[in-house]
Length: 325
Ligand code: PCA
Image 1 (cartoon, rainbow, N blue to C red):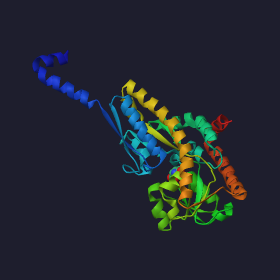
Image 2: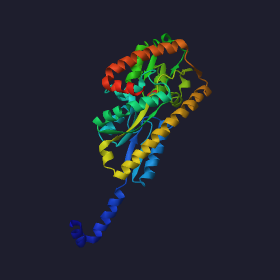
Image 3: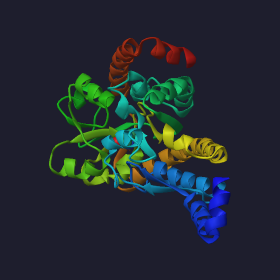
Image 4: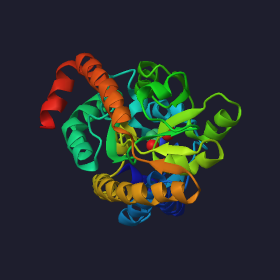
């Protein structure tokens, strides 16, 4: 009624403001991501943004800012949580200090092939969702990295060979692993890996063939030992209030695109494992399987970390372990 009255007084003005309103209905979400354009995660997130744009008829435009160009990796969680941005991607295990649930996929040999990793994810998903919800966040999807192996200057044949190395860490669990191996951990995010090697801050790292390729590891180390020790994941999270502001149809479009991104991402991770491992060899790296001794030593450390984790994660941890059986 009020509008009608205004319309009768100033009809033209009202018409133009209505037009503006419909133009403004398009929403732009800036999306910080931590990793560079060459890795499958970033490719997958860009496909996701395209799918969302198409499915919402251009009403939701997700603008991907890759390679930690908008926020540094450790700041992305807080940026989404506080609503500085509506959506972001991050490494799940980075939140492991706040809640052990987030590091379930960083434990050596708890889940080191894609099938088991997928089971672990199915068993942990509801716990991760719950933990994120407490912070006003909503999980959209999670995608794994290829299995993790060791990059060293000299060949390693046992756990003792890693002792004393300056080992790069990228999460609380990888710091713990370094300590248990008698190495000294230094936290370095992916964009700084080349500099950390060249300045001698680190002389070894444990990560995927993807990150080995994106950091051009062959410039600094010559051995890649394909231990396939664990399969960590990235997750895409959204600010729950921003999500609720979307229309019901657009919320559904986002969730559908997220489900599609998750299954595409797992496939991409598997092909990435093959192609990037091959690329390491093509670049002249000595790519090898771990010796029985090295495997046994890493498994022993993995068993210690599993026990520590189960204790820390309490009943939620137990529920996850039961869910994997
Ligand atoms: N790459 C990321 C996390 C795990 C991985 O394979 C990194 O090295 O930081």
